[in-house]
Image (tube, rainbow, N blue to C red):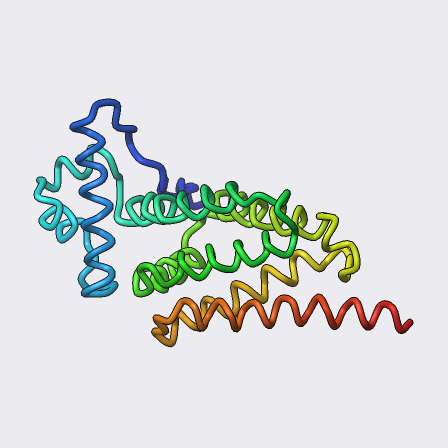
Length: 210
């Protein structure tokens, strides 16, 4: 019977506790991001990241056990601002305004560093980072539902799957725009808004006609 192998961890070896250590980790993550953006997966190695960060490969391995661990940390760094912006959405200003803000946040996240976002989307599907990704999805779904529950959205389609549908619409349109290399955030946000609110309007009309 073959011995069981433990899957490699994607967690950092240690967390930086001093400003110098934090600067080293930040340099590693930014070096990884720039390599992915400018040279792609082919050039993305731990040695290349260490050289670009200006540290030794030994120093890199003090913090990250593998290239995939760097990738996971980079994903979490990139999504941290997204989650912060989503959490700041104030539905007291209205559910419709909240959804429009969410769309702008999603578009800004994708188009700020589009090449990096596209490659991290690929890695997200490959690496076992399910729990972290699930938490992000749950936060987004909760925000959408809060928008739908706002008083000004009372007449919209309220089936249980609506929040998930809206997220799928936003993600699908934004991701495909990123894949095509689009850069016009205003135009993209307008298209996504039409799709989102068109879905809600059509759903409300269909429900009333039954």
